[in-house]
Length: 180
Ligand SMILES: CC(C)(COP(=O)(O)OP(=O)(O)OC[C@H]1O[C@@H](n2cnc3c(N)ncnc32)[C@H](O)[C@@H]1OP(=O)(O)O)[C@@H](O)C(=O)NCCC(=O)NCCS
Image (cartoon, rainbow, N blue to C red; front, side):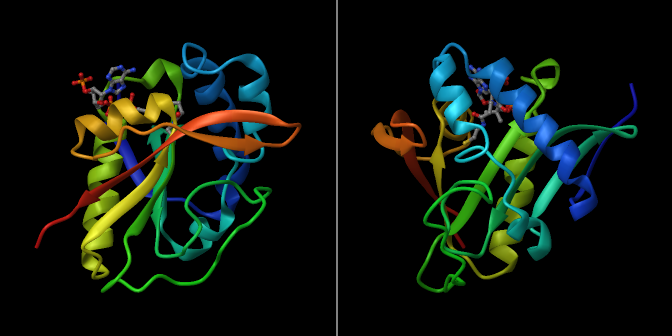
């Protein structure tokens, strides 16, 4: 096995990222969400946010030339959701007053539990800190909650979130103080 490479995503990765998202959600969410929720969330709450790619704050993880995971952070207000998600907010956050967003972590099922999520999170937090942010916040899926909780994020309250087609899904708002 080659060493994994963590690099910035480009718009040329869009299709590979979409494929990772589908494989990840379909393979790793079934214990937490039902089929209607998964299909409604794919393409809305779980889609690619190309704004992050353009901002240079989204990563792709590769095994050789094979993309196996993605995730990033944001200096913009949108808390979650892909390009198709309603209610996007592109305004820039104020690092002195606002929390950077942690966004859209997806790992291929065969690569789960090998530390990729944790490593991506550390990269994102380090970059957010370099940009002057003192805290991060995110909207976690139920699978994501296990990762973020293990990495020092606080928040346990499940929030019903509407999806297209009158489907509702539970997410959990979480935050972390970056210190310093
Ligand atoms: C959430 C997700 C990104 C985690 O990625 P990952 O690379 O498997 O996570 P890591 O291997 O870095 O896990 C780090 C720690 O988080 C916790 N953790 C992660 N997944 C867990 C699980 N399924 N059950 C229990 N603990 C888990 C563990 O403490 C783990 O450490 P350990 O393996 O040494 O016990 C992945 O499960 C995923 O893609 N899920 C589907 C998509 C999704 O919901 N993404 C989150 C969007 S907010």
